[in-house]
Length: 165
Image 1: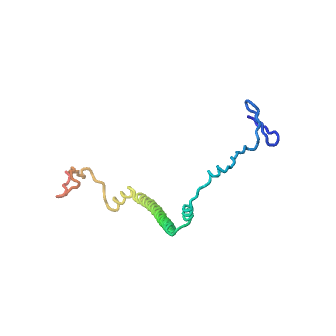
Image 2: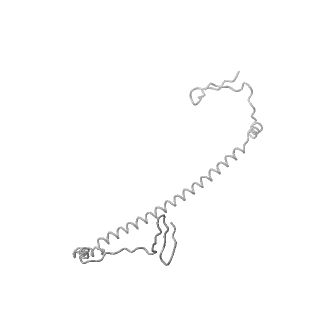
Image 3: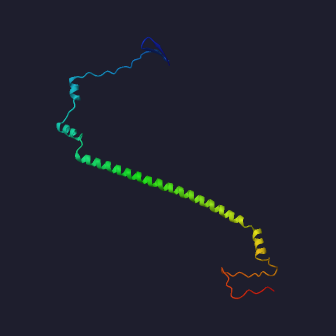
């Protein structure tokens, strides 16, 4: 559909069947006239006692005010406890992070010390100290005696080890 503006507030709409004319202002709803019978029918009925009770219910009485104040105090106290506990949790998390950092540093230092100990004494150095300083020598063939292992975890020596033949 195509709209074209012609004149002040009139529109023509070209439809598929007929060209129609529309006003730019929306159509107003007609309000039915108020007749005495209709006014009587729509009259609001009020009861004096109910009106007084409704007016009283708009005010705060002491009991309601006490309950309201207790609820507010409980809410404030629980908020304070929550903030306190959140602070404790944050402190513990910070403490855990610092302990984890210290543990990592200690592990790194320990690994460095282990590497330095391993590299400090080489097998060549041990052989040199054993042969030159302590006078040790390699064993000759036939000097090594082998024993059969028992089912026990240890060996109890009852007498001296016999010499090899």
